[in-house]
Length: 155
Image (cartoon, rainbow, N blue to C red; front, side):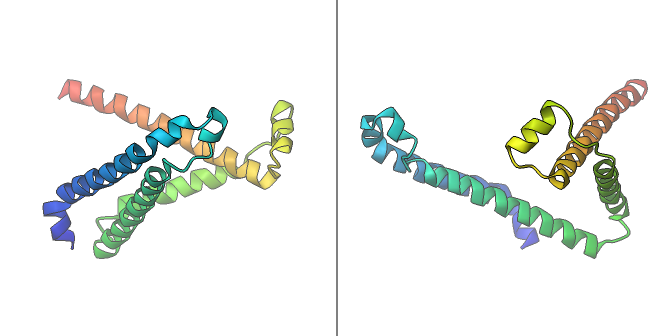
């Protein structure tokens, strides 16, 4: 399967995407006249675009699942070569849990918004930890880009 995907994976993905797009446009074109005749308030309840939305959701979940499975396969297949990746994931988890633990309780307008949307303190801490982790990763990525460009300049 792996060798098949290496050889023909892009063609299969392109073909599947093209097929789904053609089906979606066929559904939309068949129902476009009735959709246009609906009052604007009822257009929001129309299901003319549902196939495209569901196809995008299914493909996203499928791709994420396959990426995770191939990642696990390669870690099991070559654990020594995957050591840097495993350490990186461990570092990410550590950054998340440290920033989640250090999350300050909500105060001011943020507390009012959290109450309005029924966000518990645990959920708020998790959101804060995820945002902090994302910001740390974005900062590290920016630093890595700058350092690699400086390094390439002197090569």
